[in-house]
Length: 241
Ligand SMILES: [Zn+2]
Image (cartoon, rainbow, N blue to C red):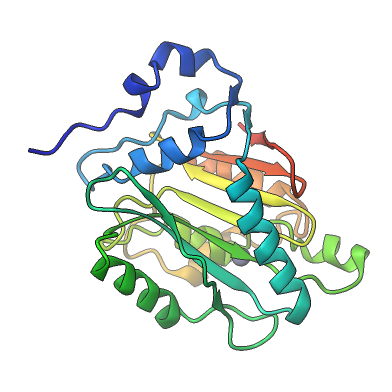
């Protein structure tokens, strides 16, 4: 029989709600709990119950720093999946990153899918999130302009698209040149209708204060997402809500 999840109960819901900070280790518990999500049952936290700060363990920093360094070296984006095993008691982050074929271009979907299938075959069937990097352009001002530390419209589109293969998906991490960011789906998040086209999504959100954090926040507000950011090596601070 399948055990019910219960991040809130096991972690003492009342404590969690009022708690301003998730200590190191809490993020891992939450991501594991996401593996219980199904299209019918939603175990994402309500958006107001997310903490103000998320302390990252050494293991997360190590992954983010390694991905940032690899991306800085050749300007190829990297991608890693975050999965949970069949018993839902272990979190798994792929150590060998998928690399984009060309500099400053997207990672092809097939390479990512291969990783997910390989993990599935190793008893890691629940895809709860992923991590990807954005390359830098060498000029600090240009990077700011190009919003490399922000999620792109394409990132949000894929995050909000309801994939039947990944009903547990709930967290997208970004390793930017100067920042770590993460966006979570909340209990209140509505995903896009499955017929919603990427070009339509982009046309709706394009040209809204491009190249700043503001479009990311506008999208988070519209879809009731929870957004965090922090400098490399530091605690993630809630940016929205
Ligand atoms: Zn991206």
